[in-house]
Image: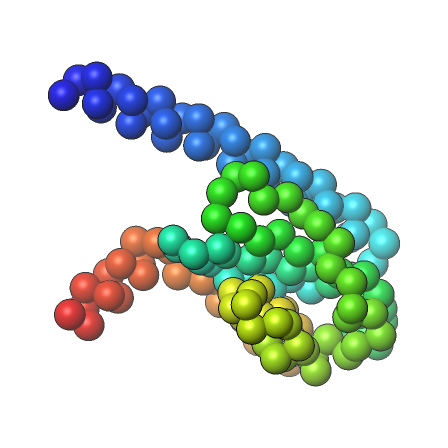
Length: 142
């Protein structure tokens, strides 16, 4: 029993350390893009499925100049180029612009458009629910 608990604790520590490297990679890419101008971020957590985050560098008119994405279920996911959106007005983004096989990536793209709409309207941008809040919501519906 003690060995099992120790293995689980070590696994959590390793996961935390490796996730920290992933978040540092994301933060560095965000900062690099931010130095170039305004950046819109969209996200969709995945739970047990591949989550996704997108970042779009936009000009003063809201047209996308550059895109980056990170998607995956593990700490191995890295920030990658996300071409194909250059010149698109950020408000016009929809999940249909992403292949259906990347469901959460499409939702993250849609979230970027919604975040931009809220920001330009002066409204508060809501934080996504934490894993504990999502579990609580599922339990309430049961």
